[in-house]
Image (cartoon, rainbow over all chains, first blue to last red; front, side):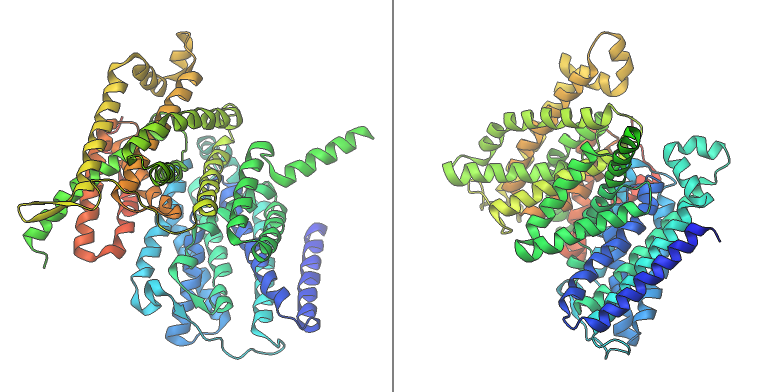
Amino acid sequence: MPRSTLMFWFAAAVFLAAVLLMTRLIGNEYPFFAGYVILQFIVLAVAWSILGGYAGYVNFGTNAFFGIGVYTAVLLIKAFGAPLAVQIAVAAIIGSLLGFGVGLLTLRMRGIFFSIATIALAIIIETAVTNWRFLGGAAGIQLQRPPVTAPFDSYVKMLFFVQALLVVIAIATTRTIQNSRIGRGLQALRDDELAAECTGVPTLRLKLLACAISGALISAGGAPAAMYLQYANPETAFNLNYSVSVLAMSLIGGTAHWIGPVLGAILLGTTQQLLAVTISSEINVLVLGIMLVLFVIVAPKGLIGLMRQFSMRAGGQK
Amino acid sequence: MVSLDLLRDAVVLGVLLGCFYAAVSVGLSISFGLLDVPQVAHPAFLVLASYGVYLCNDRYDIDPLLAGLSIAPLFFLLGLLTYRVYYETFERRGSDASVRGIAFFFGVAFIIEVLIILQFGVDQRFVSAPYIGKAWRLFGMRIPIRQLVAFAVALALTVSLATYLSKTFMGRAIRAVAQDEEGLRLMGANPVRIKQFAFGISMAVVAVAGALLIVVAPVEPTLGRVYIGRTFCIVVMAGLGSITGTLAAAVILGVTESIVLTMFGASWAPAVSFALLLGVLAVRPQGLLGR
């Protein structure tokens, strides 16, 4: 195993241990309640960038995958009273199937057509869920949390830890993709799909794989939200705000490396939490939109690009 | 079972609705269809125009259609500016620009939406005019006059735009730039200026269409989201950039939506345009009357 990989897993273990320790030491639930959202956005942004960053297919349908995750959980809770782990696992499977479907779309469309098609898919799924009485319809559905399992003393803390685990899984997956033939193949097809195909890159297989993995991770990241909110309705679960947030986080962080979406999600997620508490949730969408537009104009490579420029300049002076 | 009478009503109302949809889509037909600009913010600008019209109507009691016409020059200028920014930052840099270009317009759409919410709140807004709220009875059918007004204006708008693009010098230049930008450059014309002008025109059309939007039904800040599906569905189905195709595609969508509404209820209606769009994209991406 290369040293960087060893370092990565060591850091991941330290991170998880720290999270576990936090849930033992901090009694107040609020930090976990707020932190959960940030962790969730890290999962979504990292997963989004597999397709949007490496392959260059802009998926506006993050909300479709997220909502599918939420409603898979709702269905499992309501029908079988399934435990959280099962909810997440099944959500990931269904998310990957949906991702596979989206991957098939890439056969016929690129660029803006693909993006619009993903919005279309989200709306169609949302409409179907809205018309599904068993899942509560447009009015939504209340959910009861089961008793919390040891070693946690509150359900929110447990969700926080679970989401932290998902963060590690998402980053590890993305990191593996980035450093493998898959990632290089995706980057090749982003730059020139025809040229990539001609030089023997199996473009369709790679795109399908990227879509399925990205979809599975987004749905898995969305599944615990049902228990987090103890309530689900189609309008919030399939809210387009998820799409724009995740898009903004990935592009602001920079999509050339997995650390970009992580930085973007932490930065914007924290700002959002602060703004939502202190001012209003409208203002935080406004800030998000303005930052997205500013970054795509001024810093096309995101925070990563800015940092590289900075370090190159600093290095040049020495 | 749905009776024939109901079906007939649905078709008639669907045609009226379709022509209205054509009016809200022709702007996109120019900006996206002819100029290849990923104008995802088109519906957001549409809603913005509706709120402009609402303001004129509410404060100064101006007729909504007149208000739409009077804010059209402003929207024209806004269009010139938007295209300039888009061109300078994305189109000129080429290659990797498409992802960020899409993100740019997506961001703009959200900024507009939030600004409207901050200014006007999330409540529905409507305008008042003599023709709003009344209805005609025709062969036992009840047709709201506002629908008829929207139908007439929409038809006039689409036909005049089609004439403009095929008969006038500038209109032909716009179509030329869509066909072969390089060729135009070789002839000594400046394609960027023509495209900028065309984008301005598309936004001026949006201003008038925004007036129709608020005449036909009350408007709320997030209304644009539904119209992403409708407008893109129509423009893609029409075959990018064809104005007469836009009218035909819009009528198809209007009638389909109206029939689905009658048969399955309102909660399925939003999915119609998106399903149609997905179908068209998957089966015939060049549109029904493709170029």
